[in-house]
Amino acid sequence: MKRKKGMVTLAGAGPGDPELLTVKALKRLRHADVVLHDSLVPAGILDLAPKSARKIPVGKRYGDGQDQDVRQNTINRLMVQCAREGLLCVRLKAGDPFVFGRGVEEVRAMLDNGIDVEVIPGISAGIAAADIFHIPITERNATTSVLFCTGHTAAYSLEQLDAVITMLEQGTPLVLYMGLKNLEHICERLLANGVSPDLPVCAASRVSMPDQQLIQGTLGTIAVTLQAAEPVTPVVFFLGEHATPVNANE
Image 1 (spheres, rainbow, N blue to C red):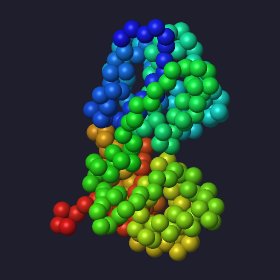
Image 2: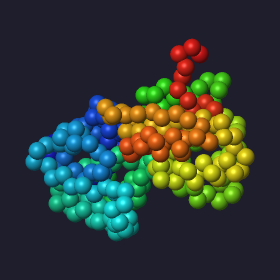
Image 3: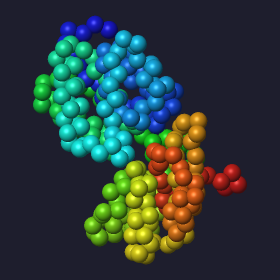
């Protein structure tokens, strides 16, 4: 795969299982000169790149103390540098590049610097978990919408929180990313604003990996249940009356 000039590919690595990587992402990875990868991308996917490719970890790790703007500026600078050297730089991002990541910021940075850039979608953890654990986040005659949020839900204004609660009460499932740290506070806020403690909640840990786990509870019990279960991150949550696995007897 010869190129007259370098370029950057933002590729979604999916939830972790190498077999869930898209064919297009695999093709780019196999021709990569440099791979800048998130911390959640497993070795099984990184091993698909050529042995000669430079593999540089640039992802965030919980509690690493690094300033996120400084980190992102460093990543942008590395991508620009690689492209200007005539290299194919694959920016390998966990899940999907544009779902609760900084993919769009990286695209803007490349365009601002005149760098050719493409984005290859990946399977987001919320979608993967719903499929793998048979959670019908949308279903004909039951749910016509689904709401994706992050752990920042804990800091929502009252207006934002009211909107979320209204959707939950109307049957819209809520898929919550990066919420483990703030889950107890999120549950407390929802309960304090009238959401039933019996609302079903599922926690999907390490989706698509051999040690994946699904923990079930309710809004009133899930925080205590998770303290006992100690799930391994990353964890994605499903909240709502329809956000539970399909019962074989249904």
